[in-house]
Image 1 (cartoon, rainbow, N blue to C red):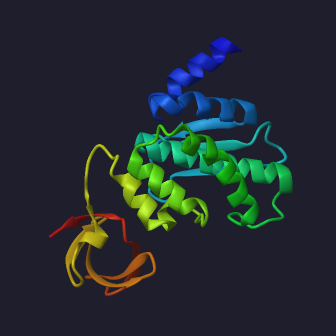
Image 2: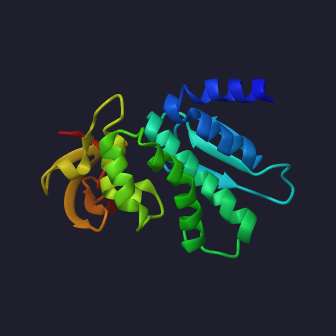
Length: 203
């Protein structure tokens, strides 16, 4: 068992911060879940799935995330598993029950004082009013993006009416609506809501 744990910690250290790989490994092993690291997906960072016919619930996390995004996303999905095992699917996916479970998983990170100071402050600030995802908490999401190996231009950094490219389409940036901008696709004139922290190519 110890050998299996050590191997798992070694694997997780390639994706999560080494200081927190043992904690994350213990969370996953104790949960008895199928944990899969998958290629990056544009629509989600991770997910949790469970079905009566499955031997174990499944958690998947994108393998192209920076170490701290990988860590936070993994704990986010483990909190979904915690909520499912206590309440089933009879509660809101990101309701109070999930928020309490996620806070419980975050406490050892905050108490360790081993997080980068800016991330420590961002997590402490968001702790009392957790959002459904790090992408819904713009401040936390900005901080997590600073750990990306390759820095990119974010939509929120462009002025209104600026033109940009996203997924091989040309857009004009419009007004902000909460966490997303109304952007017009130039060829079709269709209006899309695009997240403020979307990585874009300037023209």
